[in-house]
Image (cartoon, rainbow, N blue to C red):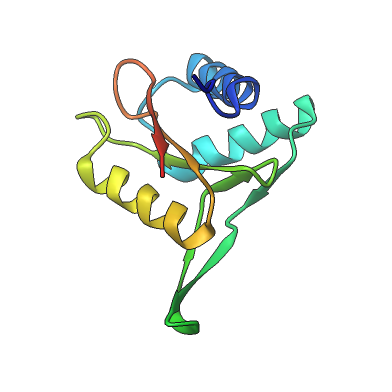
Length: 125
């Protein structure tokens, strides 16, 4: 049986998200939560890239359309930040799975700050 991939790193990121949510609560735009997360990443020494550009290949050729992830963490997995009062939408899951496919990464985390409590989904591709 294999273990949970990037368990420690994901635990760190969930800790960041909980701190941000505890401090800010819900009701802000996505960019506010991303800015706060970035401060926490820097303070905790978490290696990240914000707005990492992903290209899509078709039969070995790069398409004109690119995507930007919210965060790439430790060059290992993606974090997508959402603000939806109704929870994590299917479209957010689909978007993250597409980003995983384009990036070649195996793990994505969708974090929703929009409800009365923080929620997240861990996605494996």
